Picture: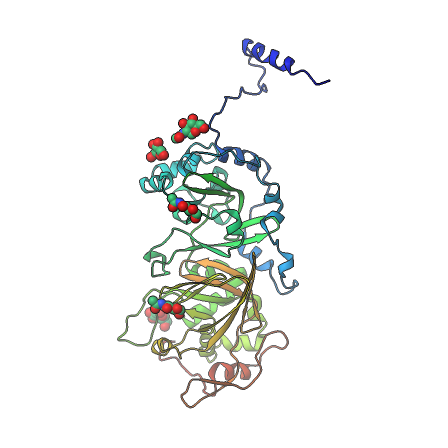
Length: 466
Ligand SMILES: *[C@@H]1O[C@H](CO)[C@@H](O)[C@H](O)[C@H]1NC(C)=O
Ligand SMILES: *[C@@H]1O[C@H](CO)[C@@H](O)[C@H](O)[C@H]1NC(C)=O
Ligand SMILES: *[C@@H]1O[C@H](CO)[C@@H](O)[C@H](O)[C@H]1NC(C)=O
Ligand SMILES: *[C@@H]1O[C@H](CO)[C@@H](O)[C@H](O)[C@H]1NC(C)=O
Ligand SMILES: *[C@@H]1O[C@H](CO)[C@@H](O)[C@H](O)[C@H]1NC(C)=O
């Protein structure tokens, strides 16, 4: 026999008739019938109650430690192969069929009780309001809930410093598309952003068993909320726009104090042309890919060699060595290359891509001729959410796609040492004559390093710049 529904039916009208005394505080509030529920509210209600993710205070450590050479190399099989393998997406945020909505992105956030700070910021900004409420828009919004504004860590941010355009993507990026990306272009564009050529600042995507993490510290907890004019995902932390490379390096001494000191000692500039031609425009802004060796990487050179490099007679070699880690005028992300002429070239998934790129050189004209500094070979393999990057065939990038305002930082666990070559007739970089120094076995001797950096020339000064 079925349970009769009528006791409930009978109680409801009764309950409405009773005036409840104040000492019944736990009586559930009467539900207003909601003809037009806000799916963002529903999803965040459930997610914020269950999310216990610890704050990622040192996201750079997390990035590099996850990948250090002492661990077995990351393999495609150790990564989720599809979105459905990630637990938080498998038991995808409640209602399995979120109610269809006729709300714009603007209406979703202004009518949601968990996004009041974001709603306040947007409402104060006419341009943003128009953009998020336009019926013909097609954009993706990372909408941080109120808790993200208070969560400290990397995104220890005042409301006023919130950069909305860094939370917006042009076009529709459902979670499944983000899953397969390594970086994504935001609407944050502009000359003041240092990438030049109106190239958009990007966010980095990393996928692990705990979900999709943006810029190494902000996990997506609610995804794929559909609005009439776009899509909405909700991240745990506010996304801080990228800093200049130099600032990133200076602010992370636990990984980069040696690199910071080396840059300081050699007076190498990362984001301006410090060229030696007085007639050419100096201090022009430009983008750079920095292959940044960690402190551990420098220590693998051996203490004798390191002391030499930081001694007065070693500084010219140190400068040359650092230049070999800088790819000027290009931002090489794992899935896209911003070229010297402002081009945007995708690195395809499913195949190996080999890039041959010139490094920083003293002589800017040589560089523009394409026969300047020594070249680096960069091999990229993308396979689903997984990607691997190697430099010169053997040095693994241990921290991929650290976005910076003036390019991108790829963290390497070994110092890159050029192969030994003889100088050819034209004085350029000639034939390779000795095996590569991979940093895997012995430390490198001062003599070997000097030959590799100087060819057969002794380096004894840099046009009066030191
Ligand atoms: C959205 O749909 C609800 C019912 O589903 C309706 O009451 C409301 O007027 C609609 N709003 C707009 C702006 O069309
Ligand atoms: C947003 O758009 C809706 C119609 O799509 C309109 O009714 C509403 O007034 C707009 N709100 C603002 C703040 O512009
Ligand atoms: C938005 O993008 C989708 C898919 O990319 C496309 O089908 C749709 O026509 C676009 N809508 C507008 C208004 O541009
Ligand atoms: C360092 O380089 C800048 C330009 O890049 C130059 O203005 C400055 O004088 C240099 N400093 C030293 C100590 O050489
Ligand atoms: C820019 O550079 C890329 C790659 O080097 C090349 O394919 C493209 O044709 C160039 N575009 C222009 C406008 O020069």
